[in-house]
Amino acid sequence: MTFNEPAERVELRAVVADFAAGYGSGYYRARAGEGEYLTELWREAGELGYLGVNIPEEYGGGGGGIGDLAAVLEELSAAGCPTLMMVVSPAICGTVLARFGTPDQRRRWLPGLATGRTIMAFAITEPDAGSNSHRITTTARRDGDGWVLSGRKTFISGVDVADAVLVVARIRDEGSGTLSAALFAVPTGAPGFEARRIEMDLVSPDHQFQLFMDDVRLPGDALVGDPEAGLLQLFAGLNPERIMAASLAAGSARHALDKAVAYAKERTVWGDRPIGAHQGLAHPLAQVKIELEQARLMTQHAALRYDSGDDAGAGEAANMAKYAAAEACVRAVDQAVQTLGGNGLASEYGLGSAIAAARLARIAPVSREMVLNYVAQQSLGLPKSY
Image (cartoon, rainbow, N blue to C red; front, side, top):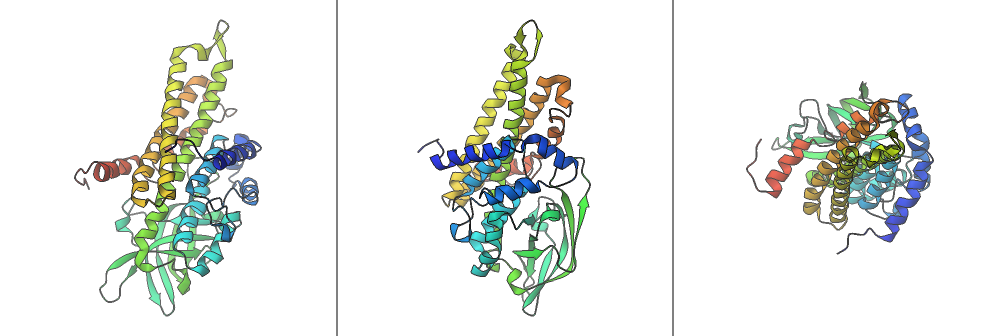
């Protein structure tokens, strides 16, 4: 039992941090302000092998686990360059395809996902279902050797840069009429597939979309893996999603804390002592540091559970990690703004725009309330509340 990361991951963190420093928060804010994606960063990160560290080596990846990919995202976020598409494309979609895809599906999708040349979005949320996946109404029906997909999705990240979307739908059994979960790889250029951007106050290079699928015709091999394992496949993707979201939040918290500490060490207004010498600022920053390190440890624990094949244990730990990291991120950004005073909202420091981004961590990809429901019911054995 050890609380130290493997030497290879420590080295991975170091090289990614050095790489990300070459872009930094200025690059991120500029691209986000222009409404453009982090194309240059994504392309170079893919060429260097950072985007596919969790993809099996036989498909061009690094052969590592979700813990390695989470480390990459944390370091990118700590440098001021968080990107939701790392949560979605290599983590959720890459994991599901690597674990459950047919040999042909793996050969088709994984090499591109490993290098970043192929980007895949993930669509589960629906306008009338929200967090209740049991109310999903997007359905697929058999049509000869293929499928016909119809339904709507909302708040789907990165469709504008994606080549395909991994869509969660339901298949109707023609005999019994029952519905079962299934995942379909849907090219974004398919006839009948429409994406409409959702205007957001959040300034981010990762845009949100509504999806409209009107009798989208798909070949038979668009169905990912075994239709009987739909729910298993879905949850195999959601645990990495939570781990990656926790890493993005933890990295963003590190970024805000670093800015606050650097400012507190240099800013002097009361004599020759920097403001960081005053407990009114020092103690809140120290508290943020403690909560951040707790969240990072839980995130690494969740990744270890998942990579060791403990899906049940990973579910509990991943939800706790996501909750803890989101709370730490919100507190870190809030205290960083408070430390900088008026400068905390000046564009020069980039913390003002981080307020909304940090707040998002409490909402997506799963709300803090749903995490608390999970822990209350699954960890504590309390009665179901909904």
